[in-house]
Image (cartoon, rainbow, N blue to C red):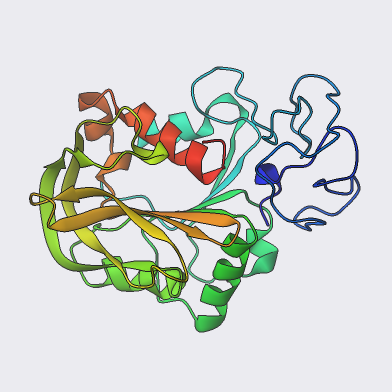
Length: 274
């Protein structure tokens, strides 16, 4: 479970984690509001506690760049075909811990997921089992933040591989390969200050279970006809689907000053700092 997004408190026991609980074990559920009786103990530090009693746990951003320094991020799968040095530098910046796992033999289970606050599904290497999908859903439901991309090669595996892991979370990838400049954004914390983002050979996002997992379409192309990004809440956690991987490429970063903002919005919302 994602300890960095749970509202532990600097004073009192309501909504907090036991200090010596092992990483990944939640004593109480996720809390958005400041618990009653919270007593500030000092400035925020990376200790799974709301030290400054602002209702956010470990919301430390020393560089004030939208990269939350306490987060542990897993990039599962390989990067896309083009260079991603700008995104990698941004993701690793300011103390955020980022780990990439490309080995297809690695099993997605609680032992793996409990080490991370955020998980991003990049170019996945295989179809995942129902047991792995259940483990991921359980982790998200308990408060994890999940993002998935698509559109790497144009092959069906671009959506069948991630769909095998996100099954049951309310949305999935599909449809025909599409390219456009995304300018149609719904007002949402994930779209703050976004006006134009490249979408080059990606897939649509299909909302398939809006009752169980409330899902909002946050970006479309083709005059609103094709959803390409959704935001889903699932239990205490959140999932962000974006149908294309070009948002990680250096060519987009160098040509679009909105890219750092795009990712700050993503990491901020998934970490429940927005």
